[in-house]
Image (cartoon, rainbow, N blue to C red; front, side):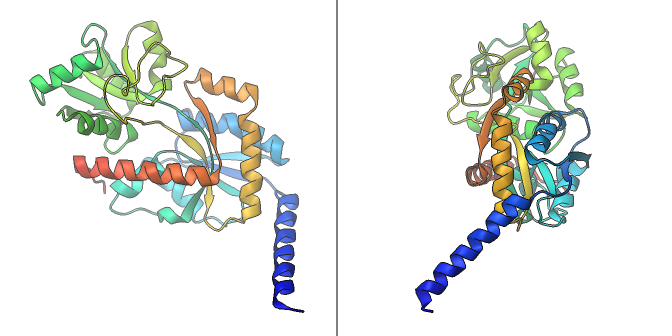
Amino acid sequence: MNKKMLLLLGALLASAGLTGWAQTYPTKPLRLVVPFPPGGLIDNMARLLAPRLAQELGQPVVIDNKPGAGGNIGAAEVARAAADGYTLLMASPPLTISPTLYKVLPYKPEQIVPVALMGQVPNVLFVKPGSIGSVQQLLEKARAQPGRLNYASNGNGTSLHLSAELFKSSTNTFITHIPYRGAAAGITAVLAGEVDIMFDNLPSAIGQIQAGTLKALAVTTTRRSKALPDVPTLVESGIADFDVSAWFGLAAPVGTPAAVMMRLEQALDKVGRQPEVTAAMLRQGAEPAFMDSKTMATFWAADAAKWQRVAAYARITLD
């Protein structure tokens, strides 16, 4: 048998192997690790997707909340798991932020690879009504008295903290950071007039924005949110290239067979197209935005590079 025939035979056997994997997987329940407590945005999205993914795969998808260390404990759990497609991670921005901020991580970033991105949630910049009328007015005040204005976040090193630091670096302003223990405490501080502004995930703040107790100045994505169509983007407000979202999707241990990754990706694509899933995402302020594994990997790398620049600018490190 000549070399060309051997290569062809090898390719056919490999293809048959991949087809076999795709046809037999899964044969038992899957575990979806959510690296945050129940009740938050990422947990809510996991509980929306899991039962529908189970229907597509023909096996239960069991949610396992593993909160702690800004999402690092759950990520480490998946990084250590067998690369067989039965342990998955509900992926979100800490996967691209933590490697930049933490001096030591309980896992290596290359141990986790993207399966598919399912959606994105804009952050929103808001103030107490009657205090600041627009982004331009905010910039005028910040530049007139550097350091006098302050902003709340849900803690050091979070995506909300970094969103504000990106805003500062993009506008060459100095606004003082006041971290709180959670986004709810930060919102309370804005309402009480203790702080001037805050960036938050849209679902957390949308109720008070719609009720008029908070005033939204802008959203952080390049397109307006369907949930707040009258609120401009920061790009529209004059801040070029500002694009931040609380994205979410699924990730897996590196080395997961290609056929399994493809099976999961195809199932998630079908789930994301279901009208009830799209409607549920939109109700929570999320925008459906499916990306396959290759596209998500490119997105992931760009997101990591952005936060690396912001962390260097603001000199943020965490133990």
